[in-house]
Each structure stands twice: as structure tokens, then as C-alpha cells.
Amino acid sequence: MVWWGHQKHDKVPDEVVNRVVKRVKNDGMCFIPLHSSHLSKPFISLMGTKCKLGSWREDGKQEYIHVFNRKHPIANEIKDFIIEQEEMYGEPFEVPKPEDVIFVSIFEADGAIFRSGLTWKVGKGKVFYFRPGHETYPTYRNENVKRIIKNAVLWGAST
Image (cartoon, rainbow, N blue to C red; front, side, top):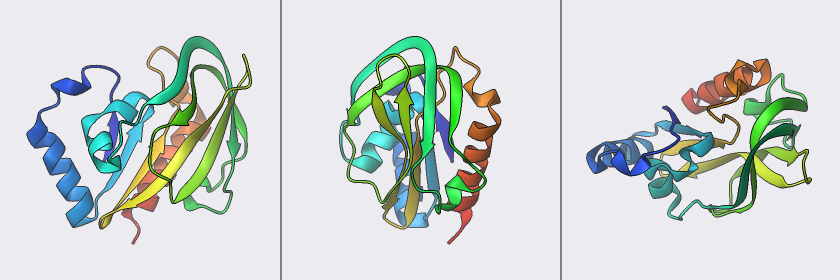
């Protein structure tokens, strides 16, 4: 399941959250929260933390995405790349220690760094958080971003 949300996370009914969490933990579903979905109720529930950011800034400056773990299937056919306009997120990111750190972002304005592609095993399921995707910039038109999401779906479907 790919989940993108920006606001009104609290409006998602608890019964929906419980179904998503159950499907991940008990049935082995993969959950892929994108960008601001770090504050979604399903992600927070699956992580068991508040999932807060150290900092953020909506300045539309460049983001350099470094492929930190080139051997991971989510990084298949991906080389380091630039997103021309993006919202900045900065560490620390209040999540449990990930199984894998696949991508790391460096932001042009001040060199802020953020672990932007992380995986976890949760119960029988998998979680891949991917940071890029602010709603006012054309991030999801970037061929690398589209490929990463496709790779994540394929990774999530594999056993």
C-alpha cells in the first residue's frame, strides 16, 4: 500500500488505521508512506514513535539524493540525482533504527542531511519510508522518484 498524506492525518478513522496495521503485521502487507506521511496515523502506529522531524523548511531549493545502499533492490537502476525544487526535512528523524538506509538527502541551502529512504520489518510485513514529494513541487514527475516508488512496490511484493 502506497500512502501519501499532507494534512488532516487525525481525520483518518482509527478503524482504517487498525486495518492497515493488522494487514502489515499479521498478513505481510508492505506499507510505503511518502513525504508528509511520516505523520500519518498508520506510520506512527507501525513505528511506535512520534515520527517527528528535527527541522523542515519549504524553500523550494535543490535536494541532492545520494544512493547510500546501491545493492538494495529499491535502489535498482538509480544513481545519485537532484530534485530541482523540494521541501527540506532535517535530522533527527524520530523513528526506530531502520533495517536499511537506502537514500540520504542533502539540501542545497544549508547542507542539512536527512535519511530519505528507510526500511523496516514490522511483524510479517515491510515498511519503506520515502521522503521526497512535497505537494507544490513536481517531485512525482521525476523519473528517478517514479522508479524508486516502482522498485519499492516490487520489493514489498517479494518474499
